Image (cartoon, rainbow, N blue to C red):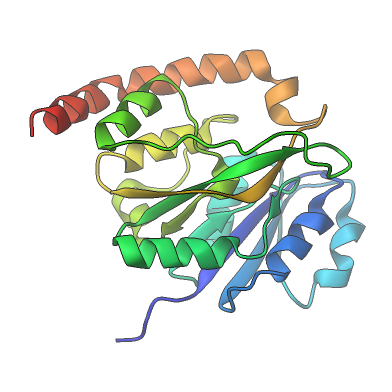
Length: 240
């Protein structure tokens, strides 16, 4: 059997001035078996920042459809056995993929996420370690029912998960990640790395700042959709 080693990293890109830095952080990974797919979601600015990297990435351009649609197009084009997502304004630390692949293999899990740092527009670190370890699966389920502490750019997962639960829901413009994690949770065990392996950029143009009210409405909708299944799952876990 051929070992599953390749990781497909998808960067959804829409008019982001930091996209070249995101690309550099993936190309600088210590893990050797990576393909980088940049999905240009109809950008009209900063496209030239990718020109120098065209030989080292898979570049896909599409009409603007939102983050979920860009991620799904990247997933469909991917040839890797594992998927990682990097937002165009965030940065992987050099050992990010390597550490997560080690964690998945050693734990036998299919989904991994990590701690991270906040950085500003200049790339300066503006926080301590942002970490939310879970003491057990009960704790994880209960926390996920009330909010999403999982940073999408910190996630690495087995591609086979998409065959089980489907890809990102393109109807959700801001919470497509939260919805997917809640669909994954009942079926798969997760592993967590408390070491920060990601820089998460906070800036005035980020979607969670500009669209905070709409995002909050979507969060409530996602939670109501999954409330019943997760409540049953929590009862089952506590009944062991």
